[in-house]
Amino acid sequence: MPSLKDLKNRIASVKATQKITKAMKMVAAAKLRRAQEAAEAARPYSQRMAAVLANIAQAVGADDGAPALMTGTGKDDTHLLVVCTAERGLCGGFNSQIARHARDHVRKLLAAGKTVKIICVGKKGFDILRREYASLIIDRVDLREVKKIGFQNADQIGHKVIALFEKGEFDVCTLFYSEFKSVIAQIPTAQQLIPASAGPVAVEASDASAVYEYEPDAGAILSDLIPRNISVQIFRALLENVAGEMGAKMSAMDNATRNAGDMINKLTLSYNRQRQAQITKELIEIISGAEAL
Amino acid sequence: MVMANSFNFELVSPERLLLSEQVTEVVIPATEGEMTVMANHAPTMTTIKPGIVTVKTADGKADRFVVFGGFADILPTGCTLLAESAVHVDELDRTALEKRIDAARAELDGAGDEKKTRVDQFIAELTKLGEIVIPA
Image 1 (cartoon, helix red, strand yellow):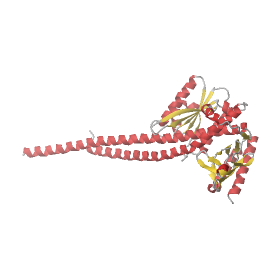
Image 2 (spheres, rainbow over the protein chains, first blue to last red):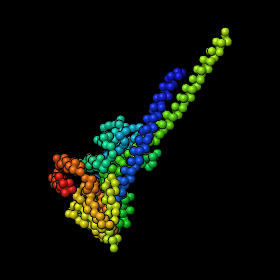
Image 3 (cartoon, rainbow over the protein chains, first blue to last red):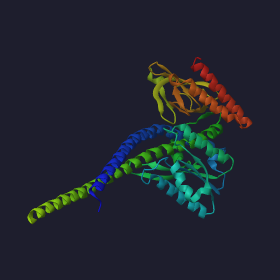
Image 4 (cartoon, helix red, strand yellow):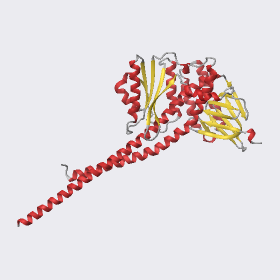
């Protein structure tokens, strides 16, 4: 049975924790808004990029001059996984969800006899995947110092991936991130980067039947565009991730605050009960003392 | 008729949509030389080099933006410029530009011949840009 003083201390410490989680929740909410705005602002670019890309792909596809980044190497022996997670924890199951999704994928590939290489973006994913697949991780990108994710960060990762591809280090590249559906729902997603899947975009482009003039020529533009598109995809994934992380953190901290509140109620109840018991005990002592006289 | 000669111009960078307006004339620094886009231009797709985009809006105002590479998608009814990065002329400062030049220089080491000429050209373009926009 904890003493009155113990209970008092306990309540004070839970109250302090509650204050912290409440503050974190509010910070996450503010950051979430900003992250959502950033994701929204980046949308026009990636949409137009997809439309243009589909247009050119149609033009080039006819004369088979498509660059290797689009057609792939023709094999699928070596897979590169780019796993994007958050830099910080305390955001519920956000990081472990992405890592689990990636891990399932790795397991499937390994079972099929493929070679797997992993690039980790973000510290948390690295920490989780390192336990099981330390030998497969070939690189990690640290974005901890980055306050606001800019296109340059994504571009660097994109360049890294393309350099590896040109060296023939892998055949298929898949990007893992968490799609931001809403504050409470983030869906871990896998997206193939190389060879570029032009499936869904090709359909909507068919209405743009305009015959384009290309300067310098379609092939040159396409080979300039595809690396850029890869960076754009990574950029979008990173932005979605930030928004998702903040959303997850917000709901996790909201839960924590509520739990702390419940705990304080319970502790206060037993504190009061004990105090009352002590008073009663003292009263009985006095009364029985008086009766004895 | 003002409307007949104007078209919708959009300047987009990966971070945001910088401009979306009715304009009469846009000068873009295409890789093969500067070109002026006006309404009813033939559909063209071109890559662009670092340089200045000059926009003349439908109500007669002129505006300038600095872009660092990208490409433009031109249709008779509109023009979309997807820039790798773009800023308004007034917001460009020398240190940011120099940082870019340094980054490009770093790429020079260990680059192949073909890439070398490309990067060299890129640096020259950036330097020229700096001289035009920011008087030393």
